[in-house]
Image (tube, rainbow, N blue to C red; front, side, top):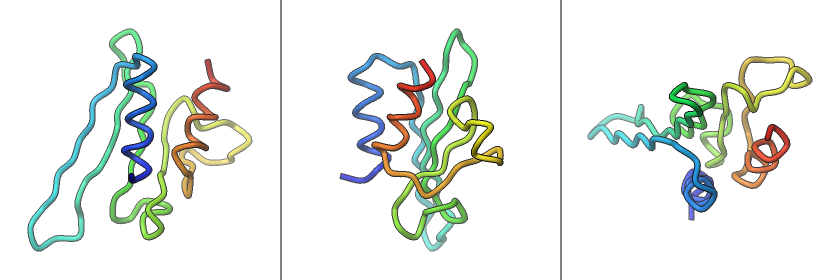
Length: 93
């Protein structure tokens, strides 16, 4: 099971409101694989694993939004497993 699939299984089990985007383009490496999480109708964070994202070549996730912390020192955090993203979700609640 891929990291984005593991993360989606967790979100579904916990009742999160989210959207999964998978766009595979023939003859192009720029496919899009993303989970967008919403709260109160607003987008609060995303997780991606796609060409150009930090960790893509290892199958790892890059996140953006409310689960990226100030100590990360950037607006995104990459090279994360699903388990590491889940730890951030639980720490943020």
